Length: 396
Image (cartoon, rainbow, N blue to C red; front, side):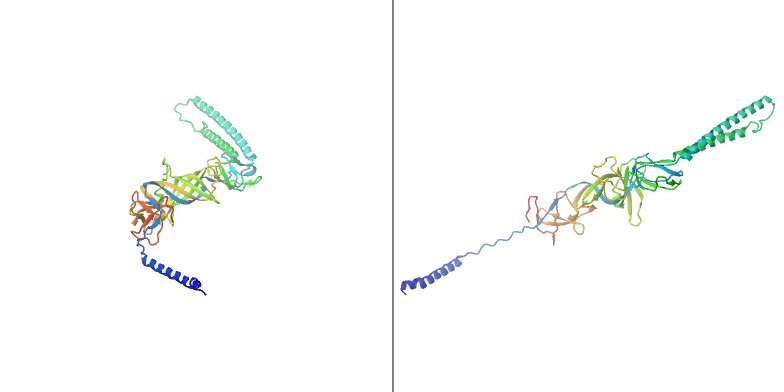
């Protein structure tokens, strides 16, 4: 092998490696360490709510059961066979006020009216006869012209007979009135716009006076019986008996499947007693047109049927200058977290005036314009650095 070939194959690679090692060593010796920088502490990212004071109307949430305002048991006052019956006289049927429910056979009662009319005519004749006899007797007594003679015996002047005839006439008139009343009672009518809850009357059935045959409930108004704690009752306007006062407005909510419906109502009275076990008072919320027969509610509204269990929201009194915050913003021990001006955490106790379904009403402890921390933080401590989330800040 020639010297040139030997240099190219062995010595040249070794030379290149040596030069590379020398260059690497020179670079390492000339390297400068990077400058140390303290890491920036951004703080925990939190959602905030600016505190606003103002008047707040209390919303009381409760539950109740729908009951009819009017309910009556239909009981015939005369006996007889049923000869006519209304088409709506069956369970679930609807009847208008004054509509005939059913009628019983009235032949016997019409005959009783005729007999009473005849008896009245006889009584009137008897009275006229006795009156004539009394006039004749007094005239004869006066013709005798007996000086010093005392008043004659009442029997002589037909006075007892006259009183008896008048009493007979009054009795005959009363008997006729009773017969006419019994005849009118053979036809029963609805006392109000009603829905038939139950009915046990059929064509040809013999009804006995005094036995109930049907139950009607009113369709013009429903009432919701709502139990309330005494502290909530103090915030509700309940009209007093005889006072011209409007009760608190209320909303009745009922869910059918995934759809919810609402009816407007009003507090009309209190039942005037407190449950001894639950210490709850009961008030009554009235709802007009629960079956929507007058088109009071939207056409897609179902009927607010009796016995339904509903949610009730009552608008109570207005509390002045309070702060409304979400329930989730209250920490253990009735404390809240505040983001101070330097974005540090401040822990503060507050006075909770009222706890509502989704919010809390705060009296003392929060000032106008302060930033309330809504986000829950693990291991939160006084002075902890925060990073309040601005509306445009979407960073994680």
